[in-house]
Length: 477
Image (cartoon, rainbow, N blue to C red; front, side):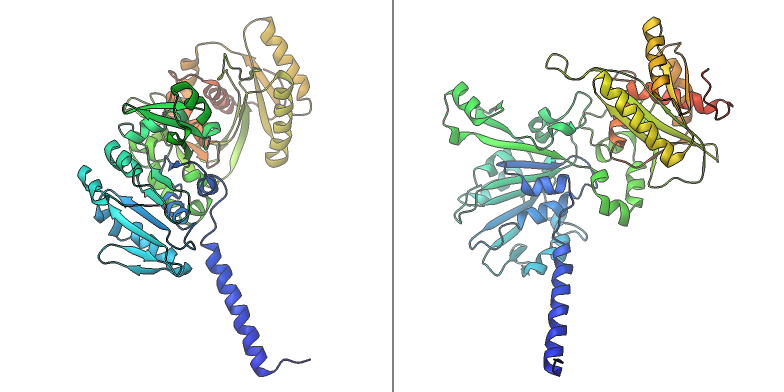
């Protein structure tokens, strides 16, 4: 039966409303990864970020809106000063683009506030001075959010914890975003989540820890029960805590829509680049003597044609144990020589596996490389001694049908790295953007004083092999 004119109009309006709702809902969908983990965190205190471009402010605003349909819900988002709140492109500006889509009515005076139909409110305030916290005496704030938490003092943060109370039924929480600042109180809070070189430990990101404050000193544990028994304390006095690391490499939307932002971060000086691009909490001016992060350009696509490919391995067969939690890893960087004379790092195999699993990974990687790039040299180093020759022979047999080369390793690691280092520091080494970038750059930047040099050894061998004029044959040198 044909629709009447009125029914047709009603149907079209319904379609339009549904399309508009879908478009609005897209604005409230976090990206998979750290953003989603941040929104789902159940910790009493959650800190998110540790590098620029990870979508921190957007995630903070989304998290503050999770309970806007609860009558009486209150959230306060803090910046250190009011200018940071109201700047064009700042916190309030971003909130204006997002919160009215959920029915919020923005009010600027006497303080910036978003009022929702349920009666929930989100206010934006500053803590300019240490004693500004006393303006909040008697306040009950269900959600306290610190945007750029490293800008606040320990005294401010600890006092505001006492204002984190709920009268609406929502469990009170404290959240914060941050960029690295080794001199901040936040650096102390997240110390467990950071490795010896200053970088977030991916496997620890999002893990719950617990703390108790005794005589102004933090006592940490893996559970409430542990701390309660150890210090004979009421479990209700113990807070849960987590740190969720993110960086621009987790923000796929930003990389697609604003790729030049990555270039902007890449152009920073060594210290700021280390903190904002790579999330280093202990970066020093002296870092990067041979392979500094500041001298490598990260690109989103291969610029030109590649004349030659090589993936070189530094082999290990040790898995982590309680007595040795960070043994040497198997590393297999893939590098190509561009037609303009520069070089590009395309991929990285990296992990700690048993001997059998290492062989499986190497064979799987060789198959992948052949399918994607066709002619790829697989370089297997020969360590000194009979054992080194035996390992080399095993992998040559394993890679039957692929291009394989090998040679005996001579000279110390630094000397072997020098040819690569010269081109690296001249800006002639590029790197394709990938989720492995941070692992590679962390090790390169800390060489030769870092804990590990497996990736550096592989890159040195890649570079040397790409210099040879040998044909694409599979002959072993």
